[in-house]
Image 1 (cartoon, rainbow, N blue to C red):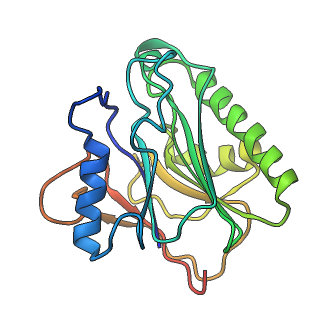
Image 2: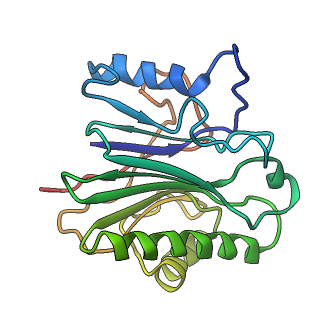
Length: 216
């Protein structure tokens, strides 16, 4: 089970409240798991932030039920407008046991379309290199792509060489899951109120995107 998402951009200052850790703890309580034992957090405690290049955190975090063998974050070099203040980029976790690479990203919101395509081009370079080093790995890329829903399948194929494996919940949906292989048993996206752990308290302005895989 994987939970991948883009949270609101935040700046966790030293000695201040860390919202990502707080959210991870809420997920742990709701799932009956313990962080570090059977629930693993990627992207908190400054992992998805390069302070020298931006004032705001990337807003990316993953909560996994399998311990990742390696993780990382890279900010996008291409950026413009107000998004330049945030560390927009991609966060990744490699699950060696299941030979799966999980990536979450949040693309540019403002500015020209080309900036978003350039950011995806940067992500493609990382994916190509990773697959060269780990042939046969299944790759999932999820997040807020800030692209027109009607274009996401085309862009995913042309720029990333990946397939769209979720069905947009609405014509204005920005959140999608992509994969580099066809996965039997993929269901459509389920659109729930963005409560994070479904406790009735909104934690995001985006719906919860779920992807179920049979035998995956």
